Length: 359
Image (cartoon, rainbow, N blue to C red):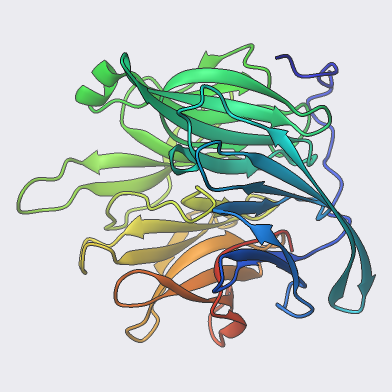
């Protein structure tokens, strides 16, 4: 099924700012809820396993449970008064059923909205007699069509910050994985003009920002006695300008509930990243911030006085980090916000999990 409409010919068209801001999270009952950025004025949307708020604040992509893996697009009409969001209308419709039928919600991961709030990228795995196959798909919410962009083994994807809608994604064959190679590719949102931009290294979790594409690269293989080591790198969309950004001690990148280990501010100057901790228990996560506005990027590992958190996103201006608090078993317990410069943290939602915002 083809995406409707021609992609814009202008590669430098700026994306309009969000028309309304908000927060979506899963409550203790498993229902996803729409609220203001501060967590106030909650309005239930429905049961789902994953949900992502669009940049314009008017759409939510939600993946339902069960064997069909139905993807529902909620259309939100809101009224903004001060810092609250009031829900006046929600229209839910099944946008697409992933095929073949053996694709269930357990094998699907929502990844990202396009900046124009038109497209949603996701990956789906199916297990059949021929073995396991993964596909990168793009849903066009304007006509409910779903298109396969690529097949392989995927480790993250991100849309370009400006029009036309383009993607960067990490994809490898089984042979490449055996050789510890996962290249990055760019492509149009319909799968055309595919281009490999990294030819060596194990690369994962690309995030396309205003300063280029930031991604995690394996620097040292792990063993029985030591964990692997990853660093953050930067490359331009044309494959030039590859350089290492950090000199940190970090394990493998750890995607958040939205399927992204790295989040960027709108100007690309600030990065927040999740890495599996090389120091603590198996489920522990280290949250790193990286300031790219300086001539020499500065990376800082956040500490929380013994508590554990995972970063769920970064505000558009880079001033605040969205966090989920984790218990001893690695389960999310509440949703919090942290200033980029540090304390104090603010609890946005108690007994909330899997947040997504566009503030």
